[in-house]
Image (cartoon, rainbow, N blue to C red):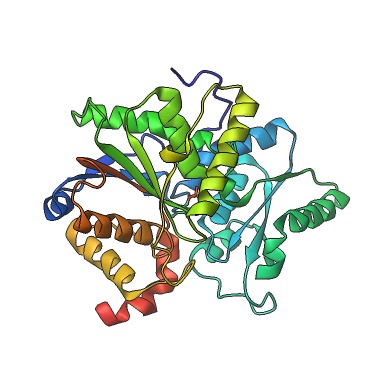
Length: 337
Ligand SMILES: *Cc1c(COP(=O)(O)O)cnc(C)c1O
C-alpha cells in the first residue's frame, strides 16, 4: 500500500526529523529506545502540531481563507504553532484560549508570549465556554465575517481527518528512519506518543495501516480517559475513510491508549513526573515538557520497569515538543535543583 491521494500540504516544518537512539536510557531500561525528534520541526514551530498544520493551512488557502481560528489551553503549543504558521502564510490568526478568569488572564510567558509576538488575536474564554467550543467558533467566525474576513476553523490540536495526514506521513519517515538504523523487520516495535486531542495517534495508526507496517502504536492520554480517546480516534479514522475513500479498518484492539498517567489532571504535575523530566535532562540532554511528553515518558518508563518487554524489543518515543511550556513550570522544579 502507499500514500497515494495524499492531499496537498505546505512545506513549513523541518521534517525528516532525526530518529536518535537514547543509549544511556536504553541501557538503563533494557530495551532499545529511540526518540523521534519532532521537537525539532522548527525553532519557533517546535512540536507535532506543525505537521498537521501543513495540511490544514493548505486546505485553508485553497478555500480562500484570510483568517484561521483555533483553540487550546492557556499554554497551547498548537495555538502558538498556528499563530506563527499563519504569519508565514500571510493569514491572520484568532486563538481562543481557556482560562479560569478571562478578566485576569495568565502572564504572557512561554507560548502565550510567542503568540503575542506573532500578532495573534487572543480571545480568553472560560472552561465552561470551552465545553461549547463549536458555539464559540461560530461566534468568532461571525464576528470576523462581519469585518470582511474569510474565516477557517481549525479544530483543537488540528486533530481531524485533514490534520491526521501529518502523522500518516510521519509514519513513513519513521519506517525509513528505522531502516537506516538497521531495523528492517519492524515486528516488536511500539511507537509511543502523548495523546491530547487524538490527531497524532490517529495519524500514526492510519499510517501504519496505509503502509502495511508490522508495528504497534500506543498513545498515553494526558487528559480525559481511555474510552474518550478510543472514540476520538475512531471518529477521526472514520472521517478519514469517508473523505479519502480509503478501504482501511482499524479494530478496537489496535487502538492502544495507556490510561492511568493523567495524574493530577491536564497541565498539572506530580513530583514523580517532574523528576522523570530532570533525570532525563541529565541522562540524555533532552528536555521534555510537563504537560505532554513528560507524562508520556513517565508512563513509558514506569511500564517498562514493571515489564521490560511490554512494548516488545524496541520503542520509538515521539518527542512531540512542548519546550516553551516548560519555562512557566520552572518554580515547580526548584525543589529538585
Ligand atoms: C498537542 C500535543 C500533544 C498531543 O498531540 P495530539 O495530536 O493533540 O493528541 C503531544 N505533545 C505535545 C507537546 C503537544 O503540544
